[in-house]
Amino acid sequence: MYTELSIGFYFKEDTPKKVIDIIEYMVSPEKRDEIEETEELGLPEHPLFHTERWQWMLNSAGSYYFRRKPSLVWLFDDIKKQWNLSFTTNIKNYDSEWQKFCHWIAPYVEEDEAPIGTYRYEEDELPTLVIADKGIIRFGNIVDLSSYPVNTAEIT
Image (cartoon, rainbow, N blue to C red; front, top):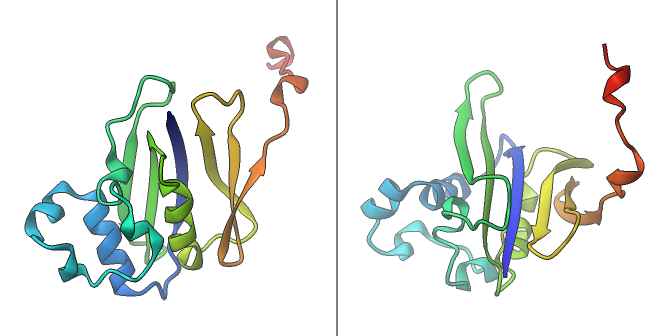
């Protein structure tokens, strides 16, 4: 079963270069071609890096269970002087890869007490909010939006 993660956030200014290098490796097929062994990256001892999909999970081709098509933006914002990562993709989350990814990046996410995206298992009717909150990432239920209809006739 597929699970979609769609998030966007800035990395804190003091994020270690090692973390940025690992993200660069994960988002860039060219970078993966350059580095023959992941040991060159100096991977931290974290459960994410013991999963089978960690190397390519951020730019997966995706499935047809979701309407959003995979996208990936990885850039250094010259105004904020910070790295930004925004993506929508989905994988078979058999080893809780998305939760492990969020746990690993949480200390480096700039936003505090802010929704940074959504998480959705293919059989779920509604997505789950992904919230950055003072060094951790929480997953929270979303309000049933069907109870807040928008009357387009009132929009002028």
